Image (cartoon, rainbow, N blue to C red; front, side, top):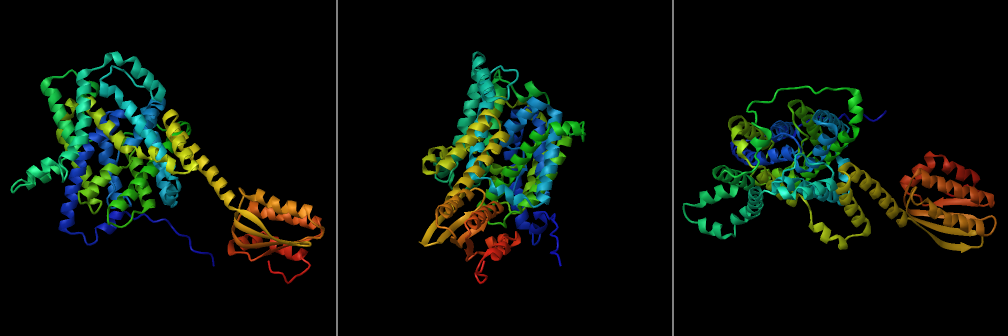
Length: 553
């Protein structure tokens, strides 16, 4: 009887986490969700603006996608929404294809992500080498930082190009429009973001001073207030109070709508979809890698059950399919907000849902206040994000790793900065495969153990696959240059794997042996090589040509 087909299941983690759910866990989840919602507020606006979109696109992406990913995802604590990794991707797509086509690409990427989860391809993402992930992550961090120099310095540049070198050129050309007030706000923002966590750390002087009877509540309050919110509120108030001549959200984008965005269908045609294959694949690939990487980080920092990668991809797919119809941008798992969620005490997706509700309430009730936020402050927040996003120490540790690792990491980094993420990952994966083939082929070897008269005994080690078949030439040459009527024995006890190319090389060896009127014996076969040989009929072919039928193949 054929084996039963394993049907994919759609089971959000929320269903399992609500079993035995109590009031204490609910209280912790609500507190964590409110904290993460506050953290997400400035980041959502900053990511959208840096991507060439209006701030409300980021806010409603964080709300809608954040709720859907929490409701349907495969992780207990993952927070979804717009991510810094998407900034350069989205900006490039908008620059090249336009906003309408970005929405179509995002929806198509959502379908692709859902299909990947449905086909249980979630675990395949783990096969992307860490050197490639670090390379493109650092590359994206550099691109984010460069894209924010314009607003950080207050330069009067009407529109930033998407190309890295062109961006540098345009920035240099407009240095004459440097705005000291904007730069001051930007510097204060970056410095404050670095200092704030240290001021309220457990061993800081301020913490020691307020650790007095009656002040512990103040200490806990200040430790829970996110640094980006502190920078956003204080510097916005300072700019408004001092009437500083800086560009704000209101001066560039106008008012932020307080209502829920209307459901709209972008113009859709198959001809358009065909032209958007590359951006669609880019969004889907980056979304899958970032979300599952984030979920793995969440597993490591929490004591909760491990995530389901396929369910997570399906949730990401649903979220990315839905948000474009409300004017949103691509969404994925966000590491910084997820870690904040865990550290704030979250234990279930209820925290992620609360984070979305918190953001929605802020947008619906206090959207007009965002008009006074200086863009230089948001640029400072993104520079801080870019710094934390990059794994810069890996560059100093390169000398500790192999040449293959260095080539993949540095190559992916350079390609991400110079070209784009798609090219970097594609070239990086191809290079990784080629380097892996080279490494595996070097592990396969053939050893001549004994030669007595016409008898040649060889021992095979490792995996005989398409990348290592040339090493069988050593046996072929020994047969061709040896005595007539050779008896060639291959001891395959240490042969762990054989593919069809390896099988073909053994067949070619057999033909050479037959031309010399000899015999070929393959002994001590392991299960996998034996199965390949027998299934292809090569075992029967060897037995038919052996003079001694007793020899086991």
